[in-house]
Image (cartoon, helix red, strand yellow):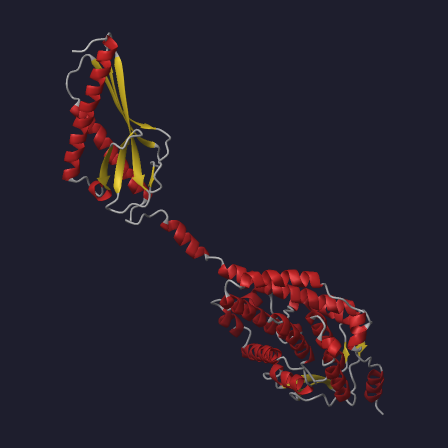
Length: 466
């Protein structure tokens, strides 16, 4: 017997079978409070858009499928690459092609494996050995060979797909020690035992995180296939979260060290560490899907900016500055008309015609004051002593909030209903002839009415009537 054969017998003898599910469950627990809280929130968000939820779950599946190969060292990924491919951004195909055609083939095979698991979960049938072997075929679809360490060095051998191993596959761990998996002759019986455990009433009624952790751990302990066991185990674990919450467990390559640490703890009998790891990654996935949904149903930056920008353009195509400019032109023209109408000698009457800034509100929702505040036309006439009196009129400029060409600019006299109106298209792009005539008539009317009111007040002040 060669030294290699002796070593294999020693490693075969060191195989430590996986526990029964009853033992697993008795020594572990799941934080169901957090699970329920996270998933309840996702359900509340997702009810608004089932299509968006489906897209978010697709993102999670792509992330899980991509990084499962990276965990095994089949290719390298980083956060940016995973994000690009999972979210199918505009550059994802180019980014994937940059890794080489073999990476795309592996990724697509792993996607098919997760689709197979989803289909398996949807059927709600108990997991079978045939299903696990078929899952291995899906995972290994793009992999023709695997590396084997022999007495003469590493060799590439053809990978049997969907078949249990025919050669020992014990490994040297990252810490330099040998780790034993199920011996070749024991593997079929151990796989049959694992399937029986996964069909037990206790397992079927357990929390999905506990189911996923146990199924994953049991398969990894056996290591039933020549290669691809980790990828199969992660996909198999996702069957139980798919069945419960319709999403896989996303384990990223950056979790690799924590992942292996948790598995090593389970090997020493501390099963809780691995349950906690699977639960944490499941909760990560729920939160990832939830944030994807919430982000997707939020209006896009472009839409919001376009909507905000549209607020600065009225329905008539005017900017609010143009509306203000139209009001300013009208106000100046009206004051000029008042000044022109009072362009006569009046030594006993002082006059003050001005445009002023004044903070005022507009009671009609469809109108607003000018943005500049210069919106008050004031007409003041004062008679001299002894018949001293004063009459003041204030005309407030009202501008249409969402101006079209046929909307009116208004000049309102105080709190009265007396007004002067001009359509936007009478003022812009240039003052119309008819409007200019009406402005002149307005000026004359204001002067006449104000002077008549001053006359009455002056007579009262003098105490006589003439």
